[in-house]
Structure formats: C-alpha cells, structure tokens
Image (cartoon, rainbow, N blue to C red):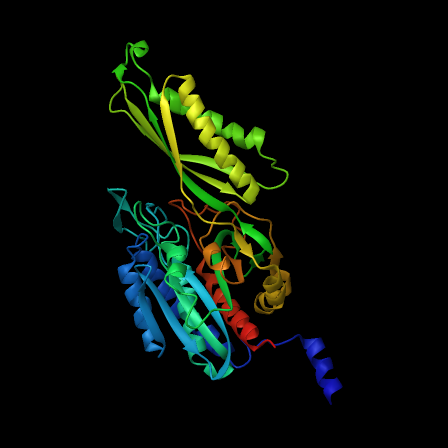
Length: 424
C-alpha cells in the first residue's frame, strides 16, 4: 500500500500544505486582496508618514484575533500568529510606503494624493508596488489565521514603513525596526519577503541565491564657488561648471576603475540645484545621487575614490567641494541554504516551469537589514500583463501592475510558511 501511495504521489506531483484544504480559501481571498490594494493605491503615504495605512493594517490584524504591535519604527505594524503546535518562528515582511511621484496611468483608483518631501509639496504614488505587497500579506494573514491547526510554530507579520528611506534628519525603515527588537520576543529563525516586478509576466517567480540586490548609498555633494555677473565669469568661480566636471569625473570611476566583469556598479546623479537667474553665476551648487554596488570591496574602494575626486576636481578649478555618503543599505543576500530549502516550495506554488533563476539586480532593498540578523529569502513576483513588450519601470509616473498576479503572491507565502514551519 505504501508503494502504491508513493507511486501516486510521483505521478500526480506533491500537493503542498498550502493547497491541501486551503485551495478555496486562497481563491476566495483574491477579491479582498485586490480591494485592499486599490485602497492603498488610492491613498498612498510617504515614508514615516504611513499613519492611515498602519491603522487599516492593524485593524485587519486585530479582526483576525492576532496580538498586534503598533508604532514600531514610527508607523510599523506587527501581527503575531501562534500555531496550534510549538515550533520555529517565521517572519513575513511587506513594505508599506509610497513615493513622491505623480501618477499618469488612467486608473479608476488613480492616486491624486499630496505629501511633503524635502520641504516641498509633492504628488504621492505607489510607484514601486508596495501597495501590492501590503495587500498580499494581509491576505496571507487572514488565511493562515483561520488555519492555525496547520501551523507548527509562530508567524510574525511585519508591515514595515520607510523602505524607500526615511526623510532627511529622521531614522526609519528595517534598520530601525531591527534596533527596536522586531526580530525578538519571540526570536525569529528566518524571514521571507517578496517584491512585485512590473517587468516580469504575472504568475512567474524569480529568485537568486546569495547577493540578489545591490547595496545602496545616497550621497550629497556641495560645491562652493564665487558669485559673479554672468557676462564676466572670470570675476568669479563657477560652481555649475565645476559640478559638471565632477559628474563627468565620477562616471570614470565606474567605467575605468571598477572591475565590472566581477560585479556591477551604478552611479547616478538624481538632482542638481544651483542659481536663481540666467545672468548670475551663483556662489554654490548641490548635487544628490545614488551609488549601487554588489561587492563590499568594490564599495569601499569607490567610496574612497569619490571623496578624493570630488575634492581634487573642485580644487583644480579653484573651488571647494565636500561629499557626504550615507551609510545606506547593505547587499540583499539570500541565505544559500535557506534558498535551496525553499526552492521546492516556490515551485509547488507557481509550477516548476514558472520559477526562474535570476541574475543580481542593481535595485536595493532594506530587507537586507533583516538578513544581517537572521537567514532570509527575498524573491520576485511577476506583475506584468503577458505580451506587454514595453513595461514601465518602477519609480515612474506610468508604473503599472497587473492585479492578476497578486494571488500567486498569497499562495507562495502560504506554501513557504507551512513548508518551513513543518520541516523537520
């Protein structure tokens, strides 16, 4: 009889815990997940300002009978679900903040929200899909809370603010949650997270063992020149011209000094501010930018050279310049052993042919701070309509997610959770 059962399993494929007895619940939760997603999309909030978002999440978790903690890292919410049997502690994480981006997509739930960023009023949009992450995890929480008999151990649902970075002068995000003990009491053994991808077709999953996403450092460069009339540039020191030389020089650090066949490096200037009118050479200029690296040694080296180059280029043109490099986020590193253990779970949830090994990307994630403390696995969920040949990138006004892919996120988290907690 045992041999017959084994043969049946081999022929039909293994039916995972998540599907055993939960198929209908998973299917039925889809409409709720989409409704939640649309609510958050239409009501986005910037980093460390996710007050109403946090209230809605906490209300939902309380309705499920969970122990709920609020106010972690300002606006973070944690729900604790204890299974019917003792065991390990697993954390599942979703980020909840939006971006200062105007929305152009013509959606019935389009965002028209406003917020304040760097002292200016800005449009606010979920231009990176955090609304989908939040809705997915709320759906996972609802289903698992009704199936505690299938849970051996404890699950922490972590809804994290400020993944996009805390406002200047503030702390926040995963680093602050860790410092405030989110992985303690009870102590977390492993953590899983996902990110929607506008460039991957729905119903597909991408993963990579080891370094999956880059370390990120924001930096600010301040150039001091000497003001003069625009018709007499020799009477001053032009900080705009010096800034242009610095931008050009910094790019050579990537193209001429970094061993790019080892790992990728990206250096981008995102904003230059200087001057008030056409015929005045200003006294100062400011630049802000981002650096992405996938190797710690290369990161250390380029930091050193950036400081040297900014100082020395400015000096060559009789100006002064300083650079401040933010500590940023570490490399998002998927624990190799945990990834190998959970790969069958990803394949059970999506189907083996829909799970793809990826190359590392130069996007960054503060999920890496959790991974510095406990083994973690961060994977990618398809959000692109099949056949779309020109998907819009994240962090842009036209960013778009096909909601048909959200249910796989729910299914995958559930599959991984049950498999991990019930593993011997």
